[in-house]
Image (cartoon, rainbow, N blue to C red; front, side):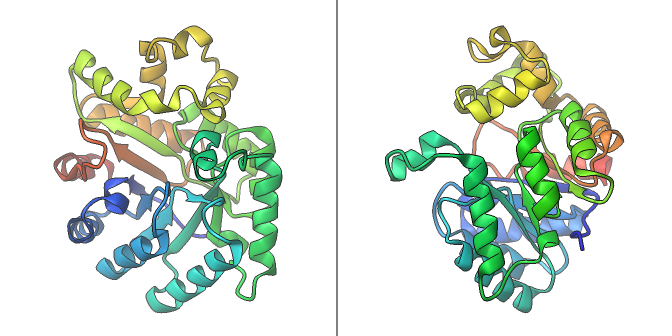
Amino acid sequence: MTFELSGTGIWSAGLRYGDRSAAADAAAELESLGYSALWVPDVGGDLFASVAGLLGATSTVTIATGILNLWMHEAAETAAQHRTLTEVHGHRFLVGIGVSHAPLVNMLEADRYRHPLAATRAYLDGIAASPTPIPAGDMLLAALGPKMLELARARTGGSHPYWVTPEHTAVARAALGPDALVAPEQAVVLETDPERARAIVRHHLSGYLSLPNYVNNWKRLGITDDDIADGGSDRLIDSLVAWGDEAAIAARVQEHRDAGADHVAIQVLTDHTMDLAMPASRRLAQALI
């Protein structure tokens, strides 16, 4: 059975890596504003303690990993943690799983990052073979390309892709079929000045422009080498990130829904990577929820 999730969520590094007390307060407020899920990344540290803290600070909202880095957690540990947190907090923990990127993974162990599709398949095998396997519907894959989307359809409840466009959402829906959960992340900047908005985006996007997983996916959607050069073209920025007023951002979120998304997780970008961005999230709640 696929995890039931609709509406609009918040994807936030600040909820995971910022001050724990502030994150708990923010999570409770975001739940009260009507956001249906809170998504957190995983680039090191105690992921499950963070998830537990957010679950404990809320009562109804889904807490999801966007994504759990499969190189950093044993499959059996992930399955056991899912069982424990679900028993304590109810059916609110959605496990998004991904292979991350070679530069990050190889920092921990040289040449560890290999064969991402096979590694993902093996990780899912490990979860299935654990004493407390996670139901397939409670897992998503950070699936971008055709083969990973095929694996998501066969072995999980759907997909949670990152740095994607509504065009990719349509591709994901077609690949996954009508019953899977499609829950893309959509970066947004609540700023109407084009130069200022694009500067904020380039600050966040710079580290991703050299990562093949993303670059190859953008090229499948028509982005060129020229778009990726020199910090990213305006065309690339505008295709990946919704910027402008509340209506402009709401329109982009609706494009994802029209393309087949069940749920859209917005990542509110500001000048600071770990910013909880609560003022913007409050304003956007009125337009998105």
